[in-house]
Image: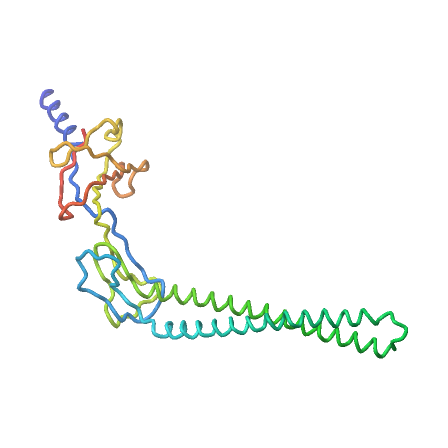
Length: 262
């Protein structure tokens, strides 16, 4: 009986380091819409294919494109006005300087009447006020230009987000032409198949001295190492710790393999 019990323990120990796992893409991520609008393009034919910077989904952007064009025209017009107003400002500054000198020249002369002095002072003050008003106008123009620049950047960002271009394996497209995509709508799932990942769950005993253990896949010794071992037990696989192995991408994913740690 003791021999049978010992054999049972040895078998149990042997199987404790064997894990059946699936070779998965390195990462599968979801793309959600950060803008809203009608879907005008959904290239469902690309599901199951690898693409490179390819537009799989397009959200209606006609109004945004019209607004962008209009803002660019307004920006150029305001820049031209600003250029002219700066020239006017320089002229008013010089004119104000001249009129101030004229007033300074006669203000202490006894040969000049108070009326003449007041007229020169008034002339200088009016010109100086024009200069200050022009300066304020230019500052307002600059603010308007900055506001338009911001709106152009915002529209460009919206237009970029309405054209969903991806690189990778198109795992799933969730919207069709004619659908309305609200902010947060899931648009597509994309897989990174440039490399692969195997996820297994190790018990406490397997983790001990893990750096000196070798990884066997389907009975063959490998030079692979764990890329990540979680130090907190998994909430689903109770008392087990998630461990990840990164390896070269296979021709076909989702193959079930036997992983041994010894």
